Length: 469
Image 1 (cartoon, rainbow, N blue to C red):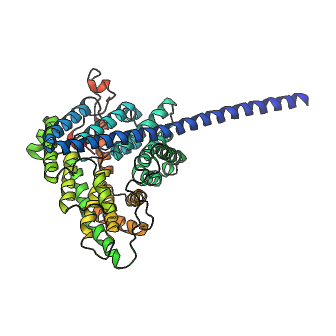
Image 2 (cartoon, rainbow, N blue to C red):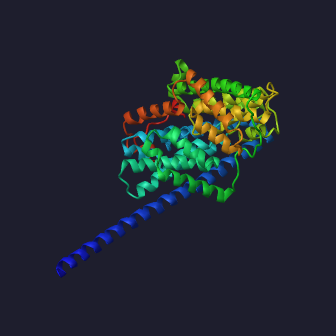
């Protein structure tokens, strides 16, 4: 009897020890996850600061002598393209298609290279360079890839072998990047659900929710609880004011759908002699794109350079009214920046173009508050471009700190989404991610002695202008 009791006690003690070890390992893993989320927030704030300073320096150069951009913009885009193709393969474009591709890749050797810390550093460096040169790009999309790379790096450090866990970390990193970049925690969660992930298990990831909260809190602790576009008190009461919903939804859907269709078509390669020139002389082509951007900047008085954040905020706040030429030239500048092949995102320019459309439409709709029309134009165009209506509605709502227009934002966003789908049946980021997947999965690894291999490029292909996202 005593022997049985002794054996039972020994088994019980062994079970407690094993449970303690498991609990300790789980807590260590959670602490690493939390640390990674805080790091994403810190890097996102640093990225935002460097991007803002680069844009401010560009503005000062334009104010000093607008003609200097005829040299600076072509040189900056050519340098960015050369660095991307030589040292930072996989850093091209916004980073969202790469993140989506990483969530679907079975070969994690490629994922390790695609989401390496070197690529993340290159993303920050080259996006900042593009803004300094006056390209019409944003930092929010790149922050998604940077956040995914940081979380993936911590996962590699933990030697995680479970595919679902590693993909969950990538998803959490991407969502955390959106949350910290816009200071929109809810927008980060919805973006991960609607755009990045198509898996129920990943959608319900507690790791993602925790990462979004911690990265958002870190950003708030460093820069304060700001709103991207300030606070607005405008409303859109049901009635005649909803003519603005129909107008902005249709116009935003058409313009955003055409924009997405152009970018998808361009990603497949430009036709004729121009396409051959791009393939043979990508750096020279990027310089030519830079020259076009400089000419557009001169024609617009410099308002087409950079993210367009200042212009969008001024339009939403009613501080300044811009002519229709603003969003038309900004529209063209963003397409040209895309075609150049440099790293940079589409979120901020899309918000600026949408605000410009809303500001122009507002003068024809006297029965609706101008600020409300601007918000509707912003959400319409943004939703039409990314084809993620819930994400667009939540992000614009959080950025303007206004819940009173939620219903109108949702209605406009879904209307614009439907119109956009009629013009461009495929989602922009999904189409670009599919192209990226087809390229990286069939690309042979470069020789070990090439600079790209030494830079962590590995099996990633050299980016062409058509790979820009």
